[in-house]
Length: 272
Ligand code: LER
Ligand code: MN
Image (cartoon, rainbow, N blue to C red; front, side, top):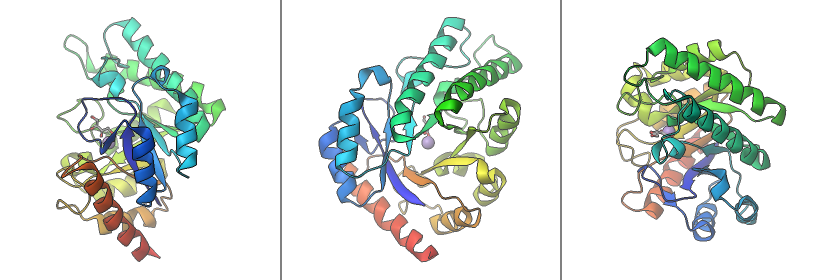
């Protein structure tokens, strides 16, 4: 398993971002702290100079394991389950453009809040149908480009569509695409899963990506989650992807990044 941390390429209202903007400075810091990769949170690939970003990523010897896309929902209201067909279509087009961006890094494209919610006046079954339809279209688009999509079960306070790992696994069955899997996030699992350990086992090889944050969404070690056990279980199921820190920038960005690296490297070394 390798370690990464989330950096937002644009200003964003979402709070659990250790680093925002200032790519040159922040990517150098992340590399100097010993991270293997940086997860990029991108609102709209059109707002990025992708060549420039790739050069800085490469200069710092970092990988980009995944691209987060939730800001298109948070800042612009795009969603796969909006009652307005034009907005659903824009959400799909936005994800296709994220797939194109991901090709340069062989990164996983994260589908978080862009799934939307069951809107007032919309039946749950209708929302789920729109969701499955959108996911199939995006997975079909991504497949020949060898890009994987990972849907994240997100806690009940942020959405009401796919909040648990078992709902995520049911959705995978419905979508039926090999390049469609899950992103598990310890912060959400701590709220929704009866057992974090059992849910990780149930998801098994459908775990494409993994977010780490402690129970309070601070850096691992600042709350009450048992990261030693979480890492052991991931190792047991042969998870070989990234552990990506999606954490509040507290007490400040550099300290939370340092503390995450210290705690997680210690646990990963213990596995060997
Ligand atoms: C995004 O990865 C996430 O975990 C959500 O809480 C975004 O709102
Ligand atoms: Mn997350």
